[in-house]
Amino acid sequence: DWLLYDFAVHSISISRSVVCTLWLIWHVRNRQVRENTIVQIQEIIYRVWSYLLEFDAVHVKLPRRLIGPKRWRPPEGSCLKVNFDAVFHAPMLMTCVGIVIKDNLGSVVGYTSIVTKQIPSAFPAEALACYHAI
Image 1 (tube, rainbow, N blue to C red):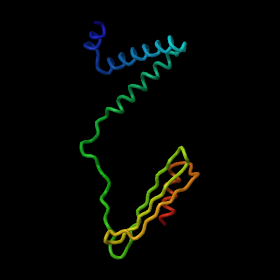
Image 2: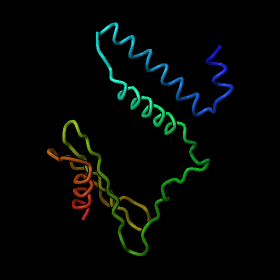
Image 3: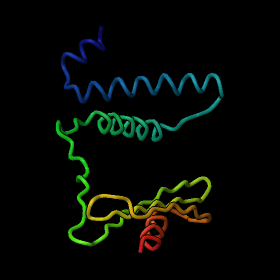
Image 4: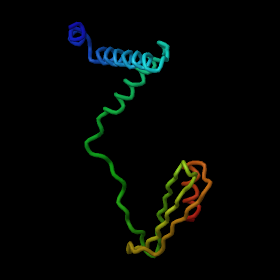
């Protein structure tokens, strides 16, 4: 009954903090019984704070109309348009670059994909894509 009273009297924010704290204390107590571990109060406070922040971040309402990517438009005159992108696979330190070249009618004039190993992060992968496109 005291928990229901607490919900009625306090704000939603305080009630969420209380429920999250109670759950975490219960979880830590179970872990202590099963695994014989001891958790410091500072860790419980930090975890409650981080859980509530994560909960708030997940429940942020997105705008009704999402802004999508711009629609592709062909180049003017006899120019060519080069589109490129890269994908980075961190566990294998590998990247794949894709390049597509189109004319003013939107027809594909050329394309390629290049796989490269020993790339340390996504940033050099994108730079490599730009380099190959040029």
